[in-house]
Length: 323
Image (cartoon, rainbow, N blue to C red; front, side, top):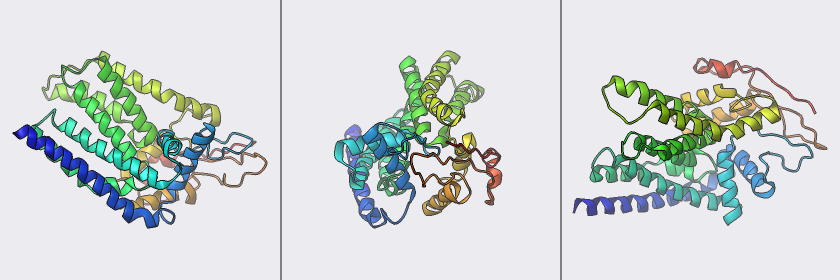
């Protein structure tokens, strides 16, 4: 009887997630073209991927111009949506509502491994009622897609702590999903290292016995490195830097991770705009003629009050490339 009730609660959570997503599609639609300017950058990259297969904001340029701010996984997801359904934001919002449902199911799958089905189903329902997820789901932005990838990473991390499921496949899945999460949102670059530290050091100190060994952690970290390698190679070949984000290095991800989700969403969008446009994170690449690559530069100085949160980001040197 309890299992039947839990199953019904999970189905209710899925229905609530769909309705919640539909509400925010209606609520956000008037702002699709007037707010959240960051959407245009993702949409442009996705269009280029869908039409030319190249990751560049300027696919028509005679000379290849690399993307120096955004990472490729979310634009790749958008490109699939554009290819299958068409280039309309409504299709993206509907697809991300589906991702929201998947997040609720993953929350249930994670919670039921550490508690009862009743509490796990309640957790899924609470997730479906959490408004920030569907709020961003109606926008062409990384939040919902990254949340799905990170939640799936957590599911694999929890599985790895279970003797029955801690095999090579689970470790590989953890590494791959951690890398995809990072390539969707660079702020998660330190997650696999943190997971390894907890599994090998923190839990043993607390007296918690786990099947995690150095070999299994090495497998997860190796999978993470292999998936990340093409992106590092892209940056090295195109801009001459072995970095996660050419316009800010590892410091940008650290800095963004220090304030995102702590302040209101529109303030976050304003800060991102300042970082990209108002403080020199990107040199004007919006004037391209005859295939000339005008260049780009990293952030030279960050005068915001919270600059101390990321000394690495503030210390990023300016770089400019000529044709």
